[in-house]
Image (cartoon, rainbow, N blue to C red; front, side, top):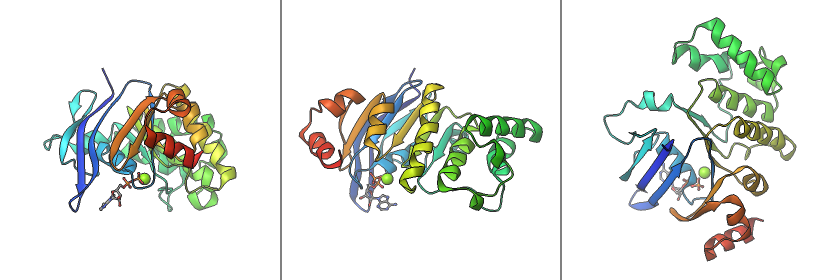
Length: 242
Ligand code: ADP
Ligand code: MG
């Protein structure tokens, strides 16, 4: 069964359709990238999955359960998602360790000792073992974003949603964040990501979706989209960014 199924999703803002009948299936361990010009609807689609936006038509299923059903428990759905955005959203007044253990302890009911043990394990795995007691403003942007990803991982999400997680970083810091995403893929995490890093996108994605004006114009294996896109608009977009 698919992890996520997006079925004919439409979304409009002030009478302007920004998602126009999006269909997408994400299978276990699959990495799906959304590419397209600014304003094409990538973030809105992720926000619909995360239930930060309601859809106007169509439906979204997570592990077979319709999460766009108005009766769904939103918190219950979000607990199964790991979300990281462009801006580092760490709590500035909390240490790295407390940032990471907050949701496992308060939302998932994990005890402090177990949550901290898991957090230390994740920090060690991603090269941040010595930062557990640091505050966010004592870290580089790349380190902060790695902590944000670790924080999302700490709740053992079914699906990770990563929206432009390297866009706010200086180029030399991008690579360390891309490295953690690559390792997540190797560990089998199912992910949907948006990125401007086309080389990385080609390298890491199983499936690439090109959005244009809220339409999912073309979808296919990364290698095919980057070497032999079928749609003229995909070709035009890739020419403009590669
Ligand atoms: P992308 O992430 O591909 O750059 P977005 O999903 O952010 O695109 O935006 C798609 C379109 O929806 C844009 O025209 C944007 O201005 C519009 N939009 C996004 N969020 C809102 C909102 N909350 N209110 C009104 N318009 C919005
Ligand atoms: Mg966006």
